[in-house]
Amino acid sequence: MSAVVFRDVALDQGGRRVLSGVSFVVEPGQFVGVLGPNGSGKTTVMRAIVGLLPVTAGSISVCGAPVRRGNPAIGYAPQLRRTLADARFTGFEVVLSGAGGERWGWPWASKRDRAAAWSALERVGGLDLAGRPVGEMSGGERQRLMIAQALLGEPRLLLLDEPLVSLDPARQADIVALVASIARERNIAVLFSAHEVNPLVGAIDRVLYLARGHAATGTIDEVVTGPVLSRLYGSSIDVVRVDGRIFVMSGRHDVERGEHCGHAHSHEHAHGAHSHGHDHGPAGVLSSPGSASVGHQHRERSPHAEL
Ligand SMILES: Nc1ncnc2c1ncn2[C@@H]1O[C@H](COP(=O)(O)OP(=O)(O)OP(=O)(O)O)[C@@H](O)[C@H]1O
Image (cartoon, rainbow, N blue to C red; front, side, top):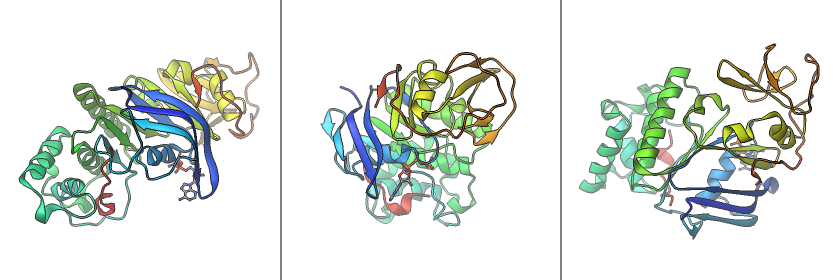
């Protein structure tokens, strides 16, 4: 039974169409990188899977059942928030709060929930964080707490929204390796959103690439190519590979990293040979994507449990 199935899904936010015609399947144990520029709909997809956002058209199923709020098969780590940046809550309390659902649970938490919180902390290598105030933790340490919290209840599907934000490359690699090993060992499917593909290379099985309202899905080699991304972005995109790193370029602009650069390397061109140094224009206007397959239980956490 597939972990997630999207069939011709359209999703709106604030009355505006964010995604349409999105179809993809995530199988049990698959580690999927959800990529795309700011505002492309990565969070929107996750919110729809946990039932926080209604589907406008099409259908979504999770572990063979229609979407429903509070689905225990899903562990969801929303984007790290700053709201508790100076909180005095300890790491253990934050993880345990995930077992409480709508409210902070620790004063009333059962022995079982406490044992599960300890076990989750241990699995993410966070036992030393148990007694420390969250406000004094680094981004990577907080991210471990979020993952530990998402693991409570032994989910079949993990949704991790931008767990690499503001981490340095070494800490990013640690988090990716941690998630990959948990997914493998427990056969958990993972949707892991990120702004660029490089930290995920070698760890993910597939990508779900979102841009301008549509999605392309497949392996990195199938999707992160000039032709596929040019169709998805609706403008000419070059995929540049340098020393094992992948750059998604619109002219001299790196569309994933939001940087300009002047590499002169081997390119995979969307439209055959062309000269460099010209501007392809903004990564832009969406057209229907192409060849790579394209188209396109969550326990609700206490809002206080979001860091
Ligand atoms: N509550 C909301 N009301 C109206 N529009 C929203 C709301 N939440 C998100 N949007 C819009 O929906 C689109 C998709 O947003 P979403 O947060 O899913 O993108 P994202 O790919 O996760 O972006 P980022 O990488 O910046 O986190 C954006 O245009 C955003 O402005």
